[in-house]
Image (cartoon, rainbow, N blue to C red):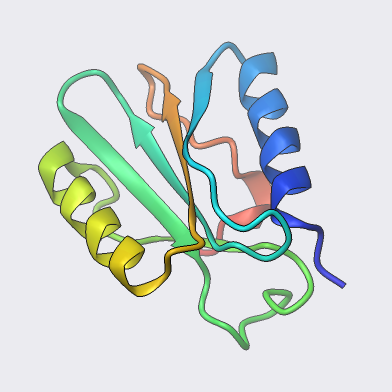
Length: 114
């Protein structure tokens, strides 16, 4: 059984804070099963976006796994926002977490595929 979205987000924000990064919930999705997207801002106008890994991949059915949504990871921030807007039109229950870290760290550890 997968951990509820709200609990996962709270733990993730604590992890980011513990490493000195600022993290905020920009969009609050469904507490139980909302898809979680993570936007990492470097401060130079570049950002990366991580979203749910495709279903069926190893561990993705029980644990939350993430994949970068842009090749090369960091792109101009307007490209990221356009993708988020598109995803939100499809899934109104999604979460958006923004992490500000000048080094561009995502703090996903083993949860990141790739």
